[in-house]
Length: 163
Image 1 (cartoon, rainbow, N blue to C red):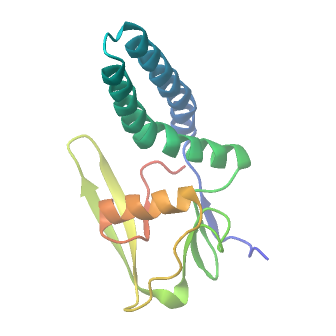
Image 2: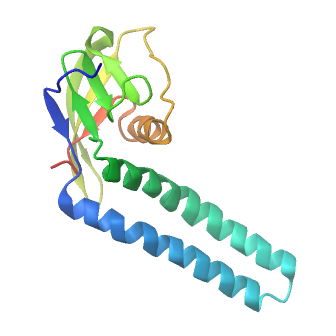
């Protein structure tokens, strides 16, 4: 049973439009680039290596995570849901990245500045020895990795793209 959420954070409309345009555009770029390389390659092995580089780089870093985001947007799943039990990056506590309030040691607010963007992060630090179950969805695993890279914790809420 899903508890009634206290707060659901969703991606801003402008970001949803950008993702909806960018993912098919990058997919088309991969297909066109691959076709161009294969049709003009004198060495078939070199052409296949070039296609593999394009597919791994653009597909692995942009298209696959983008498809996960697009599928969640189409289903109406929130980016983050806060309820009485804890925080879920998604909608399904048993499958997505989640932490219960009983597992949270502290919550800190951090400003993260880069050359181009400034973001406020709410970082949830788990209690010692409480790492929780790993997420089973691609989106949950991507969020855990992204959160760890940007904040040092698997459990961080970015306020940059939320509505």
